[in-house]
Amino acid sequence: MAGENMSRSKFVFYIFICVTSLIQNINSKDCNVHNITVQPDFDLQKYCGTWYEVKWLETVYIQPSQHYEDYRHIYTYSGSGENVTVDIAWRDPANINKCVYNTARLIEKDGDAKICFVTAKERFSYWVLKTDYTSYAVVYGCHSVTSDGACNGTRSWIWSRTKTLSQDKMAIAETVISERLCVNQSLYLSTRHNNECPPEIVSAANTDSVSRRWLLLCLVFVLVGLPAL
Image (cartoon, rainbow, N blue to C red):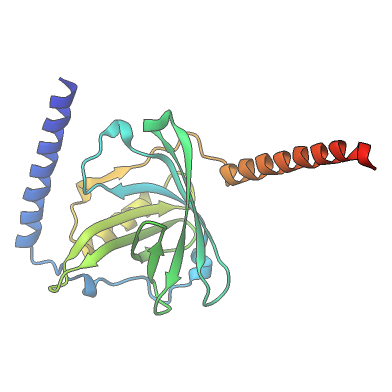
């Protein structure tokens, strides 16, 4: 029964995607990716710091019980012309809400807001459509672009410097999406923030564990070697 309900939910979701896509095509809005406008005079250094995901675009059906929680990016600026390190953390409900960590890089291409997001497994565009640097940011991503300028693999987020976003800032972000992107805004889902993951807890734990093992090995070597002195 659970499997049937999930299949039915997926079917309804994909029908909904098809219908809304048809409506968007009928609409006169320009859907050429190359014509999307981004943040003017973008300052990558000001953009760095901590951003919390408050909304994300669901283009592939995921069971609500498996939606990530407490999703966060920390961007560390390394200097002009160098890569920006992205420390990613979230809680995974499918794994008893354990914290999951990953890293990525932001690479400037032309010195504007059209950046490239790179992980060990994928690479896609990361365009900052609009931000005030202090409270909100609207970001659009695309894995590849067809010959006619359409996007294959659309991604989009609304980010906030805090775990919630005020209504006036959310209204600005949603207006940007409505005016600039060919996406259905009803597919943007809210991200829950209840228990933020500690920064770099995995790396710290691993480092401490390695350090303890080396210390124990050194003590063993010293003790074993003492009689021979």
